[in-house]
Length: 109
Image (cartoon, rainbow, N blue to C red; front, top):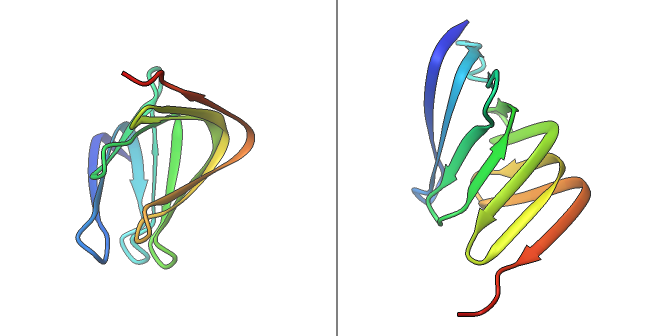
């Protein structure tokens, strides 16, 4: 069990994703990991300017995907997306909110 964890993942085109959490586990053979926070949500920052908040996150290195079944909130570029569950593909920087999706648009300046 790791405490106070910060992870940076690099995509094929140099894109990166940074995740910070209170605790986590790492499988050194598969390079898969799980991160969780006890009170505040995990903060996942993408290079393109989006911030994702959730309480639990799993990384599968073979498919290069992040996943959670917990509530999730994505904020950035005038959008706020909330829902339950997330599937993210790092190399394409695509994130899919799986259930109960709500999107709010910020008013134009």
